[in-house]
Amino acid sequence: MTMPHIVALRALTDNYIWVIRDHCHAAVVDPGDASPVLDYLQRENLELIAILNTHHHPDHVGGNAALLREFTVPVYGPANESIPTLTHRVKECRDHESEEGNAYLPEFSLTLRVLDIPGHTAGHIAYYGANLLFCGDTLFACGCGRLFEGTAQQMLDSLQKLADLPNETRIYCGHEYTLNNIRFARNVEPGNQALIEREAVVRKLREQNVPTLPSTIAMEKATNPFLRCNEPEIIRSAGSRAGKPLSDPVSVFAAIRDWKDHF
Ligand code: ZN
Ligand code: FE
Image 1: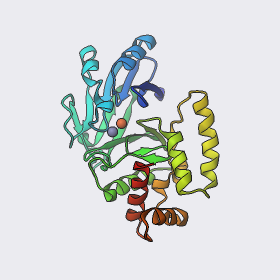
Image 2: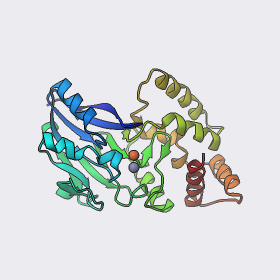
Image 3: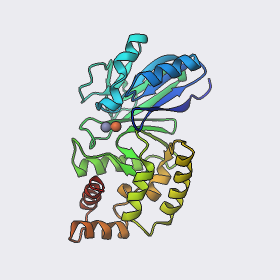
């Protein structure tokens, strides 16, 4: 049994569909469009074995139905969102062995644990296992998702849950937003040297049209302003943006999230 590896497929404008594959099987995370997946499966001569969805937005689930016309496979997704094509509605379970708390991919002997990470949407989930994290539109490289259905408190709690995963965890998120996110982060925390270094690396990757992902938890803790709401420089920036001194991390987070929405 060899460990599966992860491949990025570009989809729509700036989405990534993540493929978990070995030499003959593939599972896909958030197929917003079926055609790049079908092309890839055919080109690589792979059999689809599962679909995993993180949340209900069309750019993450839009390809489910067309894939299901070609392959009969389990479709994992959030128990608390309405996605008609799901066959396995999953959510975070205290008992890690519980069936509804995991996505199990027997072809890879891989179990991915489900984490509830509301904020971008109310039922948003992540899949975590074997040092891999598929987190949709919650934690981005150097950023986080917009608050469409949740509160700042919920999103901050969700981001904290992800930040508590091991440093070496590889982060596979839903979009190529990294360079823009870094531009914003540098306004929030101009004194962060790690951010300056990251911008140079990311700029080179984008010039070569290479994905800037996966990131790691360690990298995000060092550079992502939304995980750094206790840093003095960020507290000060958020305060001047809000026009009043802010002290608690939730108000700091809310102020920089709002700032980013208008950036
Ligand atoms: Zn989304
Ligand atoms: Fe999205």
